[in-house]
Length: 230
Image 1 (cartoon, helix red, strand yellow):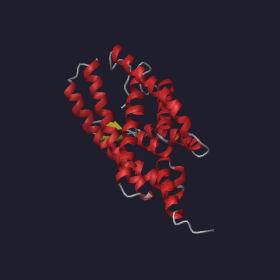
Image 2 (cartoon, helix red, strand yellow):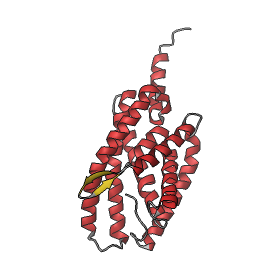
Image 3 (cartoon, rainbow, N blue to C red):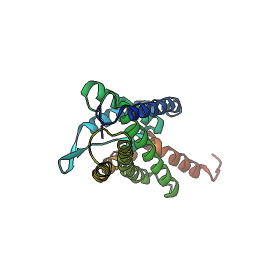
Image 4 (cartoon, rainbow, N blue to C red):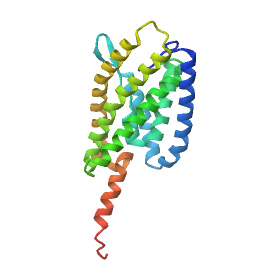
């Protein structure tokens, strides 16, 4: 999913750079409401896990490979705004120190993975959380579905950018078919990893999972609602 230098024209790269900068600015303000004594340490762990996960490629056929994007995983664990910051930092380090993704394409990569991936993954998760039974055990499956959806949506967004400003002589329709097809497979792998990680944390310390906190609060209210005198 990492876009290299020169894959998109200058106008498209500049436009995504502006979008990325605006998104990170909004995330910096929003993260103030999410970061507390529990979320702050978890944010460092999430960034480390996403960094390691993106370094582990797995084959998906036809000589291609994919890796964990981490948008839904990070959003459910530490909140969507903090997740945008975590993944943006990971992408910046990868581009500057490991040449994984282009310097001029950093805005594109942040837009696709840190913004689209997080917003779609978190949005699907919140939607499912609102319609499913209010059980903490369902947080992990809802997060897994969010991860499954977010990856091909990010691939679709890349295909749209390529159709607008791609510089490689490849048919845009072929790029769309290949990108979305491969990333559906990648999304399945990401869904499994996301579900397992979040399920493990929920089983031990559900209070550390940002996306589970409203359910924990509702459960507390249900327990205390009868108003029995102490």
